[in-house]
Image (cartoon, rainbow, N blue to C red):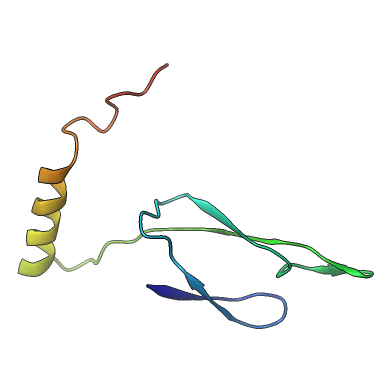
Amino acid sequence: GKVSVPTPDGEVALKVPKHAQGGQVVRLKGRGVKRRDQTGDLFVRFMIQLPVEETKELEKAIDLLEASGPTDVRDGLKF
């Protein structure tokens, strides 16, 4: 899907990557603050929020997601 992102020059529609993760950062080249004759980049951090109210559809989606992934989310991490 797409989300609206405020920039110094107004809002832009940002296409959310298919496998976006909470905390992930993407760069919007040339959409940041203007300085002299250059425009900087704007960095956007994704903040994922789940719905507060649990519906049957949401419960079904969560169960499907849990069944498709690893049982230990830390599996494979090296410290």
